[in-house]
Length: 425
Image (cartoon, rainbow, N blue to C red):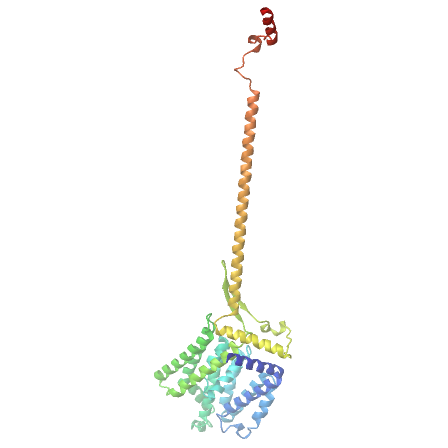
């Protein structure tokens, strides 16, 4: 199953890279069209109710224009629809969006995506998926956009409900009656405050668990985040009597979990180009390494050359490598850990060998010093012995008598014998 998904993903990716401009333009145009139809669907008697053909034209144009043009087109069309109902409410809504843009929107493009996705997915009853999925790929900087998206969503609901109330008649004489109705609706709506609490807490829990350094942290973050979301919804329903549909809420939470796991699998489990965090140690230090791919460097600091595989062998080799990585992850074996362990084993072996060589060298040096010391001691003893012999030779002997007085001249034996022989005769 994993190998099939990897092969399919590789083929889709290569096809997308070859036709990047056309495919992205078509997808972006479809997204703009769906968003316009969902957001303006709250106003059946709006300005564009008789001009629905404008939406496909705008969607096609936005598909091949910068993303900012598409976002501004959505805001403008929704603003015109609200203006058709109440000019004061339209101005108020546009001012809130402008203030948000000046504070947060100009810093990150993801802020605008979050601002549009909350009311759009809420119209499809899939608003629960926004905090769970967004926390898997973004940081706390998106929380202001999440809050602003909820405010826009309930503001559009307030404008839609205002069209069916009798206060719209009173608004003809009182210019600020629509604004008062909008403010009262936002302040007194318990669903808005419950949604703010639930979305922010769910986003925070998923983000913190996803950033934790333990195995399968994204999967655990999705599970815990959806449980927290469901628990908060049920507790809020009991405390404030929100009259939520328990069966529908349970089904939506399960669908949210499935969508989050699908995004996590397709983007994280099959993505080997993200930031890698490694931890290892030796005898003296702990090492915490973050390996950042080169393509994450700022555009001004790099030159990107796209190389599209034209040979089937290259594609097959790449897919084979991805399959091996996926199978290794399934068995719980990470190549990075294996390399680190091998490196540590080699370092330990080299260190032991170095210690043995140093110990052997020290023993040899010690032995040489002992031999040298023994030779020096032997040489000193020989010198002492020679000195003693020299002293004995130089000292006169006391026991030898004076030969001048005591020694008498001896007669040779031959002469004495001759004399004796003469006497005998």
